[in-house]
Image (cartoon, rainbow, N blue to C red; front, side, top):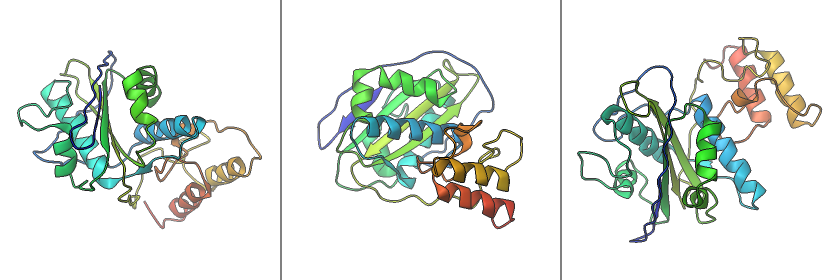
Length: 241
């Protein structure tokens, strides 16, 4: 499902599929949920930004407030077993939630939701092949994004995804620690200086791909750069955890 709004402009379309996987998350009453970007959420950001660049558009920047709105929404759908832009039981629209979660810029905002898939690639395909969802991902008015996914085995679709879009980049601060497996680009089960070297070789054009490319975007900014290699070296040196 997608929606876009500026003042009173709204457009809607529906999508949902089925699949399986791990632990439930719980949404609080108003944006009180862990909005840290995990590896699959970072992968969805990468796919969306690649899609935009293929179509001559600038990449989207992560937003802490849009991340909060997206993470809360996905958890709320999973915990309450529904699929809708409106927040069930709260009488709140998607744009109201985005504002409540701190994204208060007077600009275009939008939202895509999806259900049924664990992996970013499958969710991206749901949206790419739907004209309404694709239009949000390729909207030139959007410059910022927040992404959240949640799982609940007791819900109809198991997995729920939300992407919130905005026309103003209000900032994103990468965490001081990263999800398990982040940066392990050689798939050995450890993140160390060898992974950093491989990343630098990729950014320099010496290699064309990585064995585990889905965990290469360590800081979750939607791009694989020397910054990610630097963070891996800091991790290996014990400077961050």
